[in-house]
Length: 288
Length: 201
Image (cartoon, rainbow over all chains, first blue to last red; front, side, top):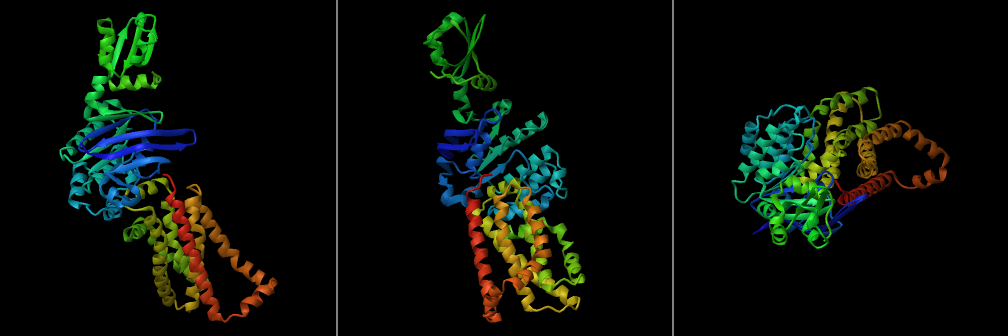
């Protein structure tokens, strides 16, 4: 399977914050969800994928090419949607198109107008008069109109109402009918991922915790409940994080088959939702 | 690259309507033609920075298939392109008002413009965004207001320098000044490109 994006041992340091040792692969032809709480390093990672930030160490490859010698070729093939509006807010969509379109060799005017119609966007109104949802649709229309192979969205659903969030996710799914296309989007809303992601990457405090298919995540991660006397220094190693109460423990494991082997029927094993995983991982990474 | 330069006109469409009255104002006020040429040249390139110093604009431009070198090159080449257009327009306006002007006025006005651009463009990429535009605008107005007086004042006191300069012929002086300005402009370009290459957005 081909990777559209490969990050190898990537690190970037800021004052008071760092992402370290990021090894991330984004598979071609799939939707990869990039999850993590606010401030975990999602935007930093995305900016490095887009060369808005240059890593202090490590290697970033997009479509197998590096930015050093293929910057333009890479960006021709990427469509981007950011959290906030990056387009000149005083301009209307028609003028923004006049600025953005000539930058791309494969810009498709018909496609652009098709999306404008589909999203019901006004062409002659300044972007700043748009609602958050409309701004998102406008960015998306621009991102989709040059036949991009990789679409990168940074928190596209943040601040959108639930109905529109669903519409957006449906739309992203439609885009995937084209088998070559890949989508990478970051979010801290886990229900978005349940709906459309094929792969999940989870970042926590600047560190990539996992990068697996949805299937693997469901298989490996589980919530385990049982009596406190089952826990000792050895058995605890199977868990990522344990919450103890007088009535018993509840823990997250990233190796549910191992837990089954160790504890058998003495514990209850439940499917861990993405929210569970985020919640427990936030509680602290177990060093075992 | 041409698209990046053309972008300034699309962005400033509305301001362009005030462009002609702006030039006319300077002509009616009987400003020195060189100053009128200078002011007319400054209009578009410096207005453009009001947009370009915003972080969002840099995120947009750098996400599009442009290299950072091209973005800066468009700034410096664009300033020259708009300067040439400004020369044409201002000349027409001066002719229309029957105001006499010489090639020397054009040369002085534009050398001053290029010098001013060379010295201030890097500031937009070094300083924190938001204030550069105001700082540069104010410094321009102050310089334009008291600059000539300072030069005259210095020329009267520092006779050694004026004597030295007076030894050259007028044409040598102009050519020399022109070359120096162009060298400074090129250095400024290189310096800004170097800084922009390392910027994080």
